[in-house]
Image (tube, rainbow, N blue to C red; front, side, top):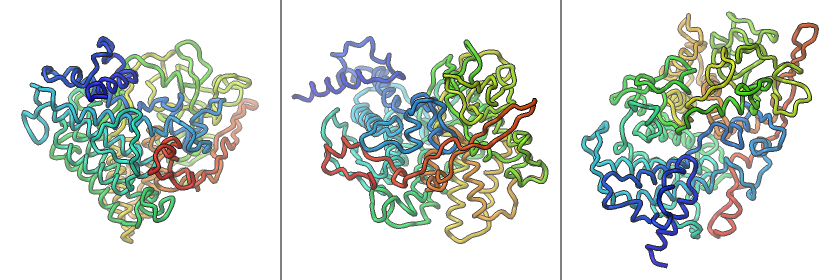
Length: 592
């Protein structure tokens, strides 16, 4: 088969597999014309079709709202369970009912390699297009647009590799070769170290070719890869690489595919440096300018479209006029445009993680006394934005999640709460409305608060490994700044963190802060894996509440809602059996 025909067949297959994001990109183009010569035309100075093809590279990014058969990924962690009656994918993930023969949405092997293949096709052909348009960024002027577009594709390829590596450990690096669909690669796995270094080198190489940040119109352009996104991904990659799952106690010793051969605390220092580089370059006082924490935590996910709202670094673009999050996760007991399906049941474990309003853990505050009867009073304000509970104001009424209440009816065939809680995060301000209305809701992949948390964790872990006991001043400063923005009391200037806190104590503070600040943003599921704490966490049943109304009073009982022991082999996913079966060089992950 000659190259021209192969190219034609390859692009036709790509065209037939376009995702919803770009389903209209080629719908007016006869499929027989979808050749590389057509898409990457030497006569198209605007690069119309080439840009559409780049959209297909972007389309592999996951839009995380309701991503796993209608559930959030965090419903497979200790922060929530699915309310669905069926044993769906998120339930199988949470209890470990999967194998190398199972195809679950989060596993992502085929999807991310599809993205890598598309990126390579774009990288290999974009220079044919004679763009007239140029751009200026933070280091250069009048740069040809194709340089930025190629850099975007290289970033996306690096991102897709990282998504594979955090799930599987070392995977096969295919370089810039766009392997044909179905073509046997027969490539061995690269080591974990080789994969990390490849990803980091790609990000270092492209960051100064990307467009600058903050984006002037983030609502329209925040989904475009920028230099800030490249540096943010580098900081995340190195944080994962330094973590216990890969750096300290891999799932199998002396197996270079699943982690490093030896522990090296310098990896924490490298991760801290990457986060600090971002802060110094792109933070509020950075040399290039402008990312920072928004004033209001609620606004981070819905109202970050103005020129001064600059916390979001990179997002996956959503659709206009959508109320899918509310309809999927809103409390039951309402009808018509106010109807919710209650898919996500946050756990008592998550609720208990939110401190009191002065930043102290529940039961440890001298200013705010914790009471089971009034457990939601005087808490971290982020709790009420993250979780709906009995007594919450919603849709111009008071929620009743006690057994038999409006939002927890007995005998219902709907997916009612299993914990007495419903998800609140990401939803619009419906406290005083009577129905849900359409919103533009993007999926935030990187934001400035994560950069601060990444630096704090990496620097504190390096100091712990260096036998230091005094916490670095910047670590305390950054965590306090996140708490200040959240609305934690700061009358004494500490925001619940003592000036004399030790590094060991700070580890738990940072991990908990990460949990509550980024709840349901697809971090917790992987954080408890990279920290290797999932075994301890799931050794105890997950908790919820059974609320009973009796003689006008609510009686509270803590109940077990899920008992799912964690098998250590689940720290990494199994490589799909089909890949191992067809590739004699592919080594399966330990235990699978």
